[in-house]
Amino acid sequence: MDVSNLLAAQAARFTESQSITVEKETPLDVDAGFLTVTDLNPVDEDSYASNLEEYLKSTARDGIQALIAALYALPTEKSPDGPLAKLPPPTTQLPRAKPLPKPKPPTKWELFAAAKGIQKKRRDRKVWDEEKQEWVNRWGRGGKNKETEEQWIHEVKANADVDFDPVQAAREERKSRVAKNERQRLQNLARAQAAQNEREQRKVDIDKTLAATRTSTASMGKFDRKLEGDKKLRGVKRKFDPAEMSAEREKQVSLAVLSQLDGDAKRAKIEKGTGDDVVNVRKAIRAVSKGKGGVALGRDAGKGSSKSSSKSKRGKR
Image (cartoon, rainbow, N blue to C red; front, side, top):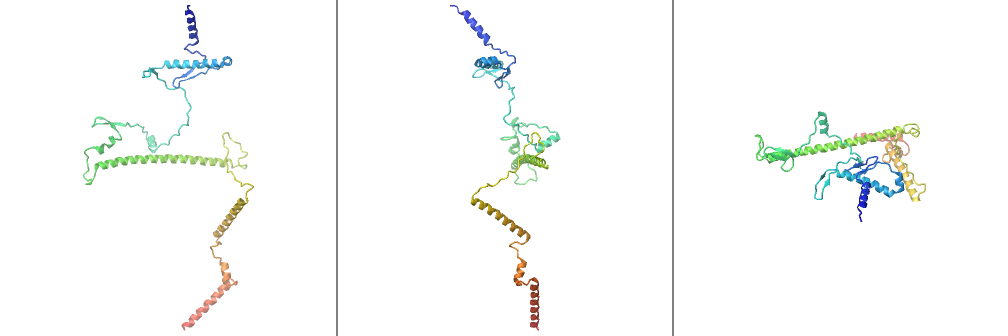
């Protein structure tokens, strides 16, 4: 039985239905960097309503076919697991998970460089050593900055001390430079923190001024026209004691009020000079004179002094 015609017809039908080229009214947006395909064509309502499963399979098949065709068009490289395609940079812009970082305030050197027009140049980690004829580290182990410390001969000034150590002097000079850089770094951090605190304080002051102006009208801002985006002012919430409370709680509240009043009265007496620690002169005079008063007390005191003086004169004679 010859079935070649049937196989050829089936192969032709399969080729027509499963073409590697996807043709649509709006071309598919293929992003090989993210391995994504975006179909912007409108949904065919008739096909969607008649056979939902078949419609979804057909749409997914077209997207996968377009993505595979784009991957086969990319350059490849050999690997132990077989050829690998080099994915291009993504073209779809994804939203950030976090907001953009705030720009850091410029340091003292950056302000000076901007004023003088100095361009920033990145220093290489390696420098050329003329003696060794090779590239050496600028810092760290065997670095160029330790060349003076590690050299085998040093030049010493004629007026140097007897116990002068040139290696120790070079090491201390290098450490002082490191300490200076660290000190400048900390100063830059402190200056940036101070600027940030100043901005926050300025913002708080502006909010307070704005709140004061909004409540400066006769109606305390109640009937003023609100602007779009204005936030409701947050006032101080008053706290009230419950209407019903236990006898013990009511006693504590009353005693607290009385102690506060007693404290205010004592404070007022001390400020006026009539407190407990000040002698009441009027009471003292009344007590000493036995109710006669200050004049009688002064007269009696004068008489007593005259009698004592006359007695002393008689005794001298």
